[in-house]
Image 1 (cartoon, protein in one colour):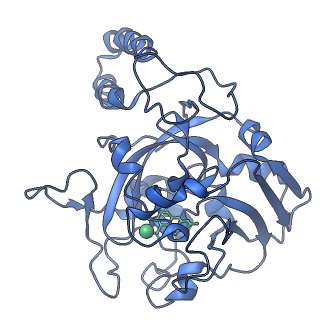
Image 2: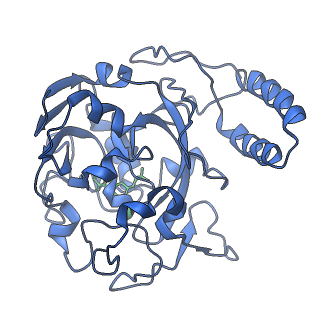
Length: 332
Ligand SMILES: Nc1nc2c(c(=O)[nH]1)N[C@H]1C(S)=C(S)[C@@H](COP(=O)(O)O)O[C@H]1N2
Ligand SMILES: [Mo]
């Protein structure tokens, strides 16, 4: 099948590579091969595969948004990538309902164009970005991250975006800026469950400045080589791979730099269950269940094994130093 160059929306200037879902697995095998020392042979094969990839289908549901290879350490996990179908039909996005199937059914009404993102607060250069300008602000990279929900399930998704740090550098935070607060869209006209009492709206999340600056924190515009489907947080969301999924706010409209720890949606709803940091930590139980293991979406047959949850969701080498000296049981 040929690549559809465009369905609707913008044409992206990033030509680098188009990597269809079906080839992710092979590519990871190649990466492993190369790590094992068969570099020369594998490189030739890689080039061949990548060329072949040009002719094989990406999901083909949305406009293409390919990401180049990332140089950031820890940007690619080796786990098998979740099927696009699972990643786009099993979602959590309470603005569109609380059932996992609701966002895919209901998020069609989300109006993602035009879209602007306001950057304000303790910065030298506050700005109002159109989505188009924000997409072009830095080169799109592909990152294969696990997203681990606090409920005990996980997925492995090839996200497309760039480090949040790139945007932060552009707006030049003041020395007094200690936290970054993310506000997401809350439009009762297009989001049927905004106004329901399950959470306070808008959905707000936050990071400490050093967490937001960590290169793994991804300002995300796409997945599987295409722009995000609405149910996954179009047109722009955050993905913070070492934290539980709820820290990764979807459909962001405002980013504010502040000197106070932001009051986040889940922390306000149930402070004893959801702390500000919410790092993936298998050693700290949720008050109502264990966090020691996880169920990988797409593997949930009768005999599917649960997987052991990794400290910081596998990013310990990259992020543990951010929390040196902190009691991670107290600051959960
Ligand atoms: N605006 C908004 N962002 C959100 C949520 C939400 O309800 N509203 N849910 C969070 C939770 S709990 C999870 S696990 C992830 C799920 O992302 P996914 O559906 O792309 O897998 O989105 C997070 N971001
Ligand atoms: Mo979640």
